Image (cartoon, rainbow, N blue to C red):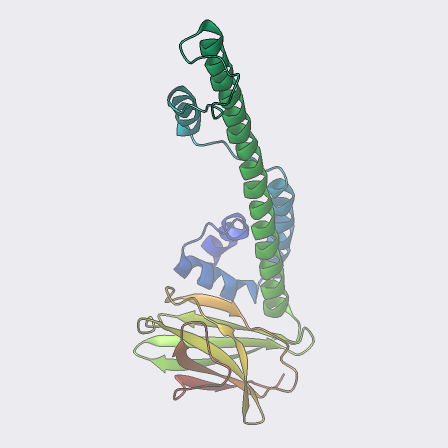
Length: 251
């Protein structure tokens, strides 16, 4: 993909609409293009504001299901002394009053549930938008930092890994390209190398062969990073031989 084409992807990136290969390529491009980084920040902020207006439409079948249940489900109080006989007019009226009450309760519960559901969907969308915006901003800060340094390595079988570190931001971003998926029930885990001690720096997406990961936690005095294959959910300490070890380059 040419540089000119990459310049056109800021909007799609801010809305998380890029396929994995284009997303990773664009995030590499962000490290060298301040104009695109600034535009992404502005578009992400706009997307977050639009997220506040998210609404959700109830499923089309909900109304039909509620009306069907109203017509078929009977609710009667238990008989007691002094109650009208079932066959009497007053008994029939009592039953129909009960049906009407049940219908009202069912409708109120159903449409009240829709309101709660709509509110939850909107809240979830706002939270997801906020998380995505924060992630994009943090990745962009690292990639565009004046003191950002880049180290690349061959991970074998055609895979490549690049780590970008900014001491001023105190964060690091790992960019993976063409990595084989981990075995079933396993995940790639990233580690900071703290003078030989390994500190967990997060997990990669097990279904992505190309990925951009903002490493968890500050860089601090870490001199490099490593990658291991761990059980799903990660480990407190590495349990396998490293897939790769990469030293951070000094600024």
